[in-house]
Image (cartoon, rainbow, N blue to C red; front, side, top):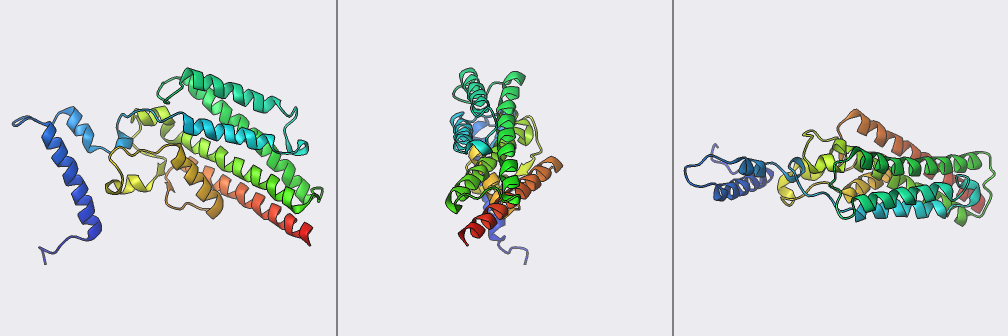
Length: 260
């Protein structure tokens, strides 16, 4: 029948849209057309100009990756041992000083510095992972299983942080470009983008969302609730899954062999 009630998901979507329209009507004087400000309110926050996201989340992630690198033994580290972490810390401090509270400064120099930090962490962790894999294949990693699992776990978790940082830095041109709402089409489709009625009006992806994306991809070896839309995003997720699978499989297999 034509007057049948809409499905629950459609009813929820219609209710969300009606609430937004009611809010806009209250902003417009009688007899006037919608202002540009009112029209902007129809768009979700991730497509509008918003405040820059807090600096502390990504800073803690970078510090965590540096600490994890320092926990590895000498044979798995990049030599000289403390040079790479020192450079990473200096770059991080420079970024914090230049843009301390919120990431809201549009600067090619700052973005280059941010990508430089991530690249250095990536190089260091890739080197450690390669050394570990070679040692496992050649059976030179003969320490007790507990230490082997700890070293493999540190490399795996650093890998999760590294890919979370890359997803965060590259999605829609980076955090500042996302803040400006300059790119309409996302590289990653989060659940709140597909169903805006289930999220607060001011929701937009921040670093913790990308960390969750990276963690689930490293454990499930496939997308979960966030879908890669562009080719580079798909290839980056494929690379992370491959690295994670190889590391986990080899470390666990060797640890089980040692225990026997």
